[in-house]
Image 1: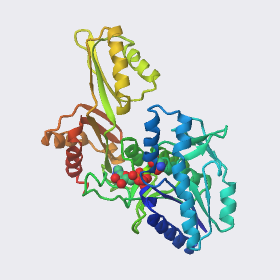
Image 2: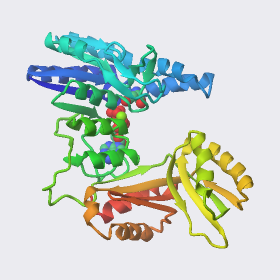
Image 3: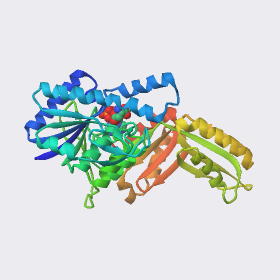
Image 4: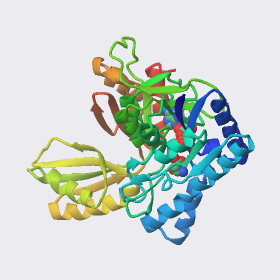
Length: 404
Ligand code: ADP
Ligand code: ASP
Ligand code: MG
């Protein structure tokens, strides 16, 4: 028998009708002789609704209590799905994260899975049941409920697939695979048959929210065959695989990712001397703010400018820290901009191709889009632009690299 983990996202279980359709699909797979473990998200909009409730009480909820609240969304769907499966004559049992011992650390709101005790799941499967597990949640060593960060049901599915050595982990969603870029922004985007873990990880990290970053990390680390498919139509979807050496015709660029969640800060005219970068970055890190891109200019007149990006939610906090630092360091000025966006080209084929950056910059220039920051790695080039140009920029690049 093949063992498949299937994960259904919020839209796929967004209504009772859709939950019934998911049950019918699972039943068909059972009839084809597959053993199935199902992971579900909360019904679409539910996690946001719960967040809204907590926001009405406080803007700084106690992280432990927020997880108790947010984890309820998934508990609703596991029960409804099992009822639907029973109605269709399919034996199934639902479990919360703690019931199947999805043990995490205690980092509430963004916990990491440490281990899964697969015995209970195995014994249900052996007795011919479909096992339905609540995504996005776990339990720490003291029995506290934890959640895995937004989009975390993907990670629950991959972790279960790794623990049970499943033949495939299938992520069912509202698109029929991974596309060259978000099809909501570029309707001409093309579905990819395959993409490497490395590229998918880069796409996810740079803003493509089709898969949670940690799910891709996990799948790569434990070599879990991962597939993204539509829950509304049949198809092969996109397989995420290891890089194949002999793949001579591999595309140079596999996709374009973008991110509207960043903000940019600059401290101008800081004394150009050893230790300055540390003096700036240290207090930002101490405030638990993550830095993304960092640029330091060539010094002139004994001073230099230092620019970096942070998550937009941390913008005000970072600006306050910089203003205070500017006084201490004798810097001239602090500037900030939270209306920026980052666009990134991703592709392992880039390694062996020159001229990618020049084509990219030319395409943006032809649209009159000013580039504010640039950063590169072996398999990606990112630029920061004004956020009003995001869509135009993504479309221009999609067509310049002929990704249609
Ligand atoms: P789910 O609720 O099923 O987890 P998500 O909303 O998390 O679904 O992810 C699916 C969405 O990801 C799609 O609707 C699409 O708009 C978006 N997306 C962003 N980038 C891509 C991409 N490169 N390929 C496919 N979908 C993408
Ligand atoms: N329900 C959670 C969220 O909306 C987890 C998930 O859907 O993967 O982020
Ligand atoms: Mg998702």
